[in-house]
Image (tube, rainbow, N blue to C red):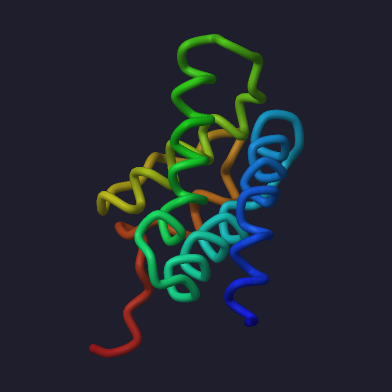
Length: 112
């Protein structure tokens, strides 16, 4: 019963996520957390990938200039996709704090 209730919330939540990506501000760590939690919570692939697919769709629509998207949001969505592929973008004045936290080339080693 709990998962069935969560499934009903998933589609409206993806629309809310679309609105936030297009108009608001967000932190990269929150988007990463949302995507990983949806992947762990749901069993069907469609449900697991709905939020990441929403982010990619917003990025594609913004790159095709179908609507204006803040530069910071555009760079953070690109950073999210690059992190998934194992890469990163360098820090800029727009997203310096969010990008540095996930830079794989700037890892502090805990052992010698």
